[in-house]
Each structure stands twice: as C-alpha cells, then as structure tokens.
Image (cartoon, rainbow over all chains, first blue to last red; front, side):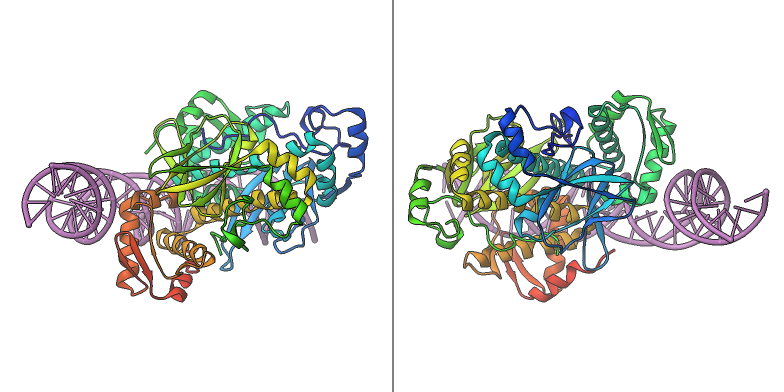
Length: 241
Length: 241
DNA sequence: ATTCTGATTTGATATATATCAAACAGCCCG
DNA sequence: CGGGCTGTTTGATATATATCAAATCAGAAT
C-alpha cells in the first residue's frame, strides 16, 4: 500500500468535542467519561498561517484538531524544510515532543481551525486509571509510527507520479472516513507544500497533476481535484521501478 | 541535524539485562524494580537472517535488543522493499504493531543476537502502577516518531552523499553512546541494504563511499569504515541543494 | 591453497527529476 | 475595473541518480 492511511479511523481523545465516532474514544463507562472531563480541554482557534507550536517550544500538551487542518514541518539549519504531514479534524498532533519535552517540529494552520488542548500530564494520569484510554493513547502513537514508515517507503522507493497518486488516495480515504466526498475535494496546500511533503519540486508535482489529467484519471483545476478513476490511481502505485 | 540520533540515549525497559545505563530504565525504587521483575522477560537468540517477527504476525510483545542488531523493513506487494531502520543493542522494536495488533513490518537479525521479549499487556499493566515506566514507554515511542521524521527529512530533501554522511554520523553517535569507537566500526549491512534505507541504489551508495574516501574524509574497505574527519562529514550535510 | 559464489567497485549510458525561464491565472486591494 | 502579487503551468535544458555491464574482491566451502 504505502501511505497506509489511518488504518481504521483516527479516533481522538477529546471528549467534549462533538465529532462523534471520529473523536470519541472507544466505549467508556459513564464514570470513565466523567473522569475524562477532568481533561477540561481548552479550545483555541487559529487562522491560516498561525503556529500551533514551533520547533523548540516547551512541551505541555497534545492537540486534538477539532476542525480545520494543519501541516507539520521540520526545519533544517540551512533553510531546507520538510513537511512531515497534513493533519485534519479528529487527528492528534504533538506526539514528537514527548520524547524530549521540546517540540521537534512546528505545526501551522492551513485554514481557520479549532484545536482542543490536552495537557499531557493529565492524559498520563487518566490513562493510568482508564486502561482503555491508555491503550488508545498507545495506539495513536503507534499509528503515527506506521504512518511515518509508510512515508519512508513512499520517499525511498516510489517515483514522482506514484507518490502523487499515493498522496491523493490517502486524502481521498481520509475524507471518506469523515463522510466527505472521496472523489471531489479542495486541496488546502500549495504545489510547493505538496512537493515538500513528497520530496519533489513544485514543478514536478504540477506536471504529475497535468499528466493524470491528460490520462483522464483526475480532473484538476489548481486547488480543486476530482478523481475520475480511483482504480487507475491505485494501479499507478504498483508500477514499480 | 537530520537523523537526529537517539537524542539522549536509547534506554530500554529490560530490567534483567545487564547493559547498565543503556538498558536500565531511569531511577526506580527497590519495590518498583521488584514489580518490574514480573515482566520476567524471556530471552531468545537469533542468527544472521533469522526473523524476529514478520509482517502480518500477531502482536504480543515488544522486544529489547540485548546484543547484536536487527533491520526492520516494509514489503510492498510488488516486491519493493524499504529498510526502515537498523536497530542495535539497547533499542526497542515492535512499536509499529501496537496500532493494529498486527506487525506492520518485519525484523531480521543482522548477526548473532539476543533479544528480551516484553509482553505488552504486562508492560501496560506495570506502567499503570509505575508512572516513571509509563513516561519512559511514552518517550520511547515518541523518540521513534522523531527518528522517523528525521529520515523523512533525509529522504525528502537530501542528496545521495548527504544521506550517506548522515547515515555514517548516526552510526558513529550510536556507537559512541555504547562506548565503542565513534570513528572505526564494521558495517553489519550490505550496500544494498544501506541503499534501501537511504532511498538509493547500491551502486550510488558505493560511489558515495568511494568519493568520501578520495576526499580523505573516510577510509573504507568494504564493510570496515574509519572516519578520518568527522567535521567534514558533518559539513557535507549542510551543503543543501 | 583453490574454486566458487555473492558482494562490491567502476565505467558507460539512460532517464527521471531539478533547474531556469517565461507565460498564465486567480485573487486581493486600491 | 485594473494593476500587481502570488501561485501555477508549461517548455527547454541541466544534472543527479538509475541502469546496464563488466571487472574485481572477499569470504566460505572444499
């Protein structure tokens, strides 16, 4: 596969956000839910371009994206930057910071977004008391590891068009999971950002889009994409080198 | 940076292995240590080429590498494979499987190796009782996420020689951490495996080695490497494109 | 020591992607 | 409504890496 896609679904931990199945953690008892309220997650909102956190910031909380979307990126001294992911509603970010208590990357809002702050200390306390929450947290972290390894596969062994196909299919699945159209959507990121994520230059991304359109696989007009033939997009990924 | 290297040190959880500071978890009280013994981690040994687990295997345990080393790799349907890491003594593998209860990648011994099996259920139970262990486990998972993102940066934005330099420096640091020479070591992996890890073909890896040698930065004779000039190797990584 | 096998190095060439450059389109703001 | 800005597309060309091929080397088995 590659970009193995949020395997089942990106359940988050944010109890008081109303994303239903997406955001509520598995099946907890009433008393467990009451405990969860202790998290009393603060909500904060962000506009396009706002930083949720920056590289070097002290770590205190994980963040559940309530609405909108973010990108995470690493900066290298010499100005190079690498987008490491695009996160959408129901997903958790900030996991990288647990390791050193300092944020290793930065998170930038791609559009108007609302985020629940989940103080990590409380999360740890609660997950000592609620085994289901503990397991949930572990799964979320592990899922991130699997996702990252999928991207390593993509970057290490796929060619440009395969990468773009994998990217589009991944978006498609994630939209579907949120009961949005799997075949028609708006991209919230630029060609340049897609390129950074996929390890390609923006011109290469643009050419790959154009080529898919010539082939009748997608319809693309700048930021709006329609997938005409999911199967052929899938097939792209298996063309190997 | 890139390949940010096990930030502080790869402390593991395996209480009854005697790797001293590497393998013992932080500072626990006597009673906590006694609890840890409940893990009663079984030790298993492996020869070069043996599988510790395969993709698709049911997940039960994490594994602490007691001695020797492993590689982990993902297989793609069409035969492509991507080495996702080389792990050495004191490091924990299997984290990717927590997500789905199924191993997402496979782990193969690179040499004679001994491994402590850490049943994950017990680990979760214990970490509910020993907050330090809980935190430790979270840090290990987070460290893996940071490591993976470093590799994404490497694969997404570095050229061949930079990648090899980053790889050698990462090995160097990890050997140093284990009180082995930071400048002279044997590679346990082939050019082909290095290539897979770095997203390059084996010939490209070989040429990069040769070029570093011509430049007087390293001395390389097939599997044995001596770094003559750490600073210049560092400098390679910042040459950007 | 000798042969065999697979890994590594090195060279010649092909190819995918980057780079440079220009035209074009969408959009904000006066 | 018309600049001007920024992002996108497209073309021409350069370049890094892959591919193909052959020679060499190292280590294992005999």
